[in-house]
Image (cartoon, rainbow, N blue to C red; front, top):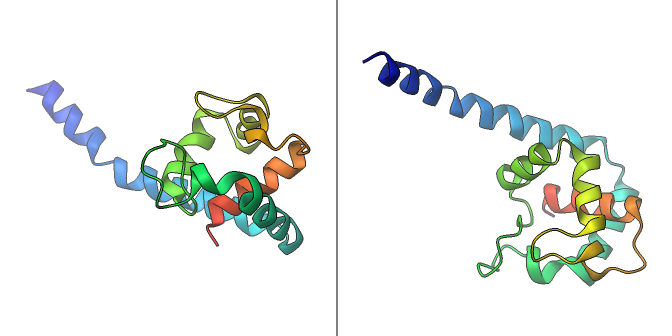
Length: 119
């Protein structure tokens, strides 16, 4: 009986964790300058949209504006800089730099921040 109570107690924390992660994503985006977000939009439109657009259900990449999914990725990569490193190196089906050969870490960070923001 005690393990069951523990499971229910842990499950009751899930909504609070999601809210905290959403706040963290909002904080990351709010710290980004408009110039950074515009740069991110340009990179997204040129290199990222095919896999990260909301309507693409064929790829498991985090989608534009899906803060819950981006939050999971940022947490798994131990923060925004870890997520940028992952994008630089490539991960699973995503090739290094998402095939944006000319992109550096700052460019990819801008694209990620734009994708977290969602518009």
